[in-house]
Image 1 (spheres, rainbow, N blue to C red):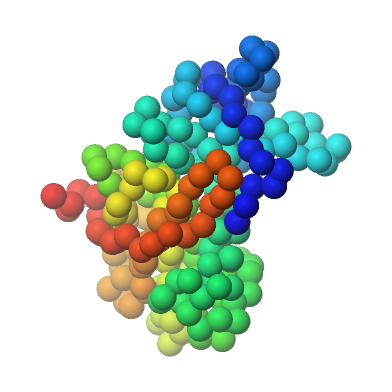
Image 2: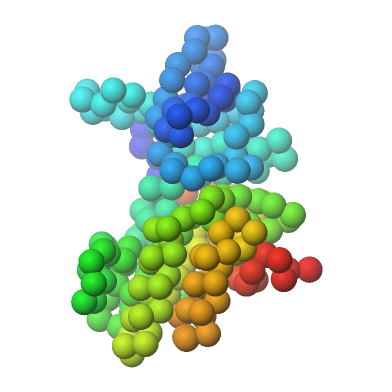
Length: 234
């Protein structure tokens, strides 16, 4: 997917109140922009580092600028707008670019069978839930970066689908160019880690694909290994 209109660059000053980021524009002026990320953004907040933001043409928006990419001190790019993960995966599914999910016919926002809530994608054969990974720690990407009741709910729903005889996949969309493998941060959210372990034992598939990220485009690039619980990774 392409960023349209193209992203503009600024300098991060601070993130606060979860959804707000102060930036300094190239002309030296300051602005407050929207941050569409409900997580802790661990390893993604670097005051003084370059960031890239989009601008909406919707006049009803209070903050028309939104934080999209953060550049780390190691010059990695991180897509911190977690809403982009589903757009990237949707495009990859349509192009049948994910080998494990090449069947086609995927729909977005699919109802969880016999339950409330929705999975991100599904077709006649499989349900898919997508999670965005942005936290690079000890040379691996870990998820989540904060306790997540919602993530646990989704993985338990995937588990129940497998128990009912339906294929289910947890897909980690790695939105950090420095990440080469994904693990569950069992020290941050042991309940989620246990739910994933139970789901995998029951037959839920876990796959991870890394994004190619530039200031102009985002796309799934290649698969990276899922490593299990972070405490067990050497």
